[in-house]
Length: 247
Image (cartoon, rainbow, N blue to C red):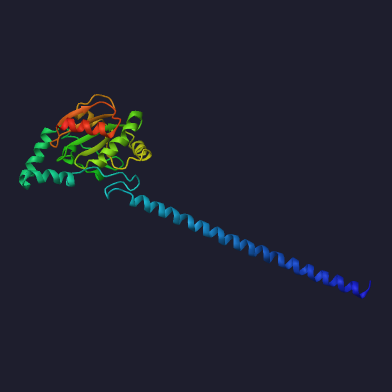
């Protein structure tokens, strides 16, 4: 073997050794780079979840609403509704006697319900007659499994939004409150506050027929003006029915 061949073999051996040493270093560098990218993706994911949670909380209609459902708060005594009744009485003493009279005259005087999506303590333990006193009230009874109700609820929702001079509320007449919340969410019913009536208290107190949907119109004193055992198909139809009942 000549000198030139020996040098060639030596150079090849050295280069081969360098390549063998360099491969682990290259693999280690690539692994570190991938781990860095993977860590960024993991840290971004919780941030996105936190942002969504904040949006849901900010979307709640009032501090009294359930932060997980975002449902509108139901009327309670001491709210703007009750204040309207007090203003009409002239003074605080008359207001107190008026509330007692409303409870006595209203068939809802003994009915206490939680707001749909909230616990009873969050919704308040006041009788519905006090919670709804001071304005004409439109009560729409519905249930999550009722198909005609699903067609009517968006209409009732629009009327609730358009007529702040009325108390327009829903009453979910089924024990499965979570399913009721789900239906309102799916239908994008965002302005209609609903009470949860697991025991049929409202229908029994108002002596309503056993059908849903059904709508009852009450006077500001809580007396029943008219009952509509039907499905309303437009906002104008429901508005006309309420106006006729109160005239």
